[in-house]
Image (cartoon, rainbow over all chains, first blue to last red; front, side):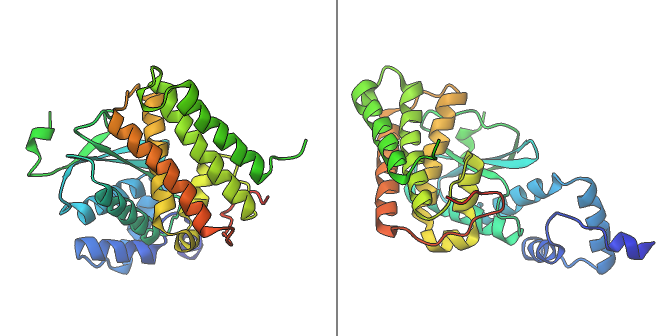
Length: 143
Length: 138
């Protein structure tokens, strides 16, 4: 029975990549038993990978200057990450896109999610979802 | 019916851009809710012409995004084309769905983004692109 359970296809994050991402960002190494449990959880709740992606993205960009807030929303199973910057910065926009695509690559799913970037001092839509990050130097930006 | 050629898409892009500048009035348009989408669809047809020249015919926004974001294609194309196209797509989406009225600086950056998309496509020329699953060949 356990043999057939292990053989079930799981169309989610390849586990080795998932392990590497978690180890890289959280410094924690999962045991084989824990990985099997995580696999079960992910198989039952595939949207978790979107939130994992968002959290890992926040980790990666938290030190960026001009960063104000990062928001996360689930768009029919695809994550939408909205970044609000204090002011528009061309180079920052490029770095954020590159960081996002690198991270998506590391998750092994090249079509995962969408990144939207807006400047707080310009007209922009209200970010949907949950605020994951507020820059300590941008407290004026938060309502 | 035959599918549109790369030149058909380029002509459509030029028409959208003409519509933006001549009919809508560019960045000082009285209809900003249409001005930003006009710029984006000019870029979309430039991109589609490029894809057809490269042997692909993506049919949806998602498929175009899939082609641009495929890791091997990103290595071929570099970061600028994807990033500028994303900028236009995001601004257009905000105008269409979120009732955002963009300011002059945003329109100026959008105009520049369209120019950058064109320049990047010209610089690259037809290249080999990997078709992601589900994307039709031209």
